[in-house]
Length: 119
Image 1 (tube, one colour):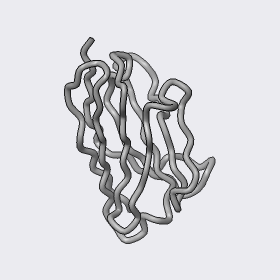
Image 2 (cartoon, rainbow, N blue to C red; image 1 turned 135 degrees about the vertical axis):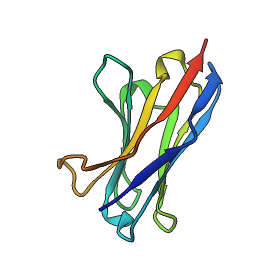
Image 3 (spheres, rainbow, N blue to C red; image 1 turned 45 degrees about the vertical axis):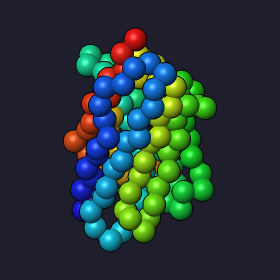
C-alpha cells in the first residue's frame, strides 16, 4: 500500500510559478513510477507528467513541455512538479499517482490540490 499526499497548490497570476509536492508513505517508493495528473470539472483527468523509478526518464503532455518539470527524491519519498509560466488553462485539481510498471494501471492516488491561475 502507498498513501500519497499532495501540497503546494494555490492561487497565482498568469506567468507565475508554483511547486507541487507529493509525499508517499511506505519504504517502497523507489519501486513505483510516479505521475502528475490534473482534472477540470466536467472533463476527463489528464496526464501532465510522469517519471521513471530512478528519475532518469520523464514524459510530459505537449501543453506543458518547457514550462513544467517533474522530479523525485527517492530518499525522501517525494515527487515534485515545478510549474513555471503558468496560464489560466492550467487551472485544475492536480493529483499525484503511483504505478508499479509502465502500462499498468495507476493504482494509488492522492486527494488532489487545487491550482488556480488568474488572468
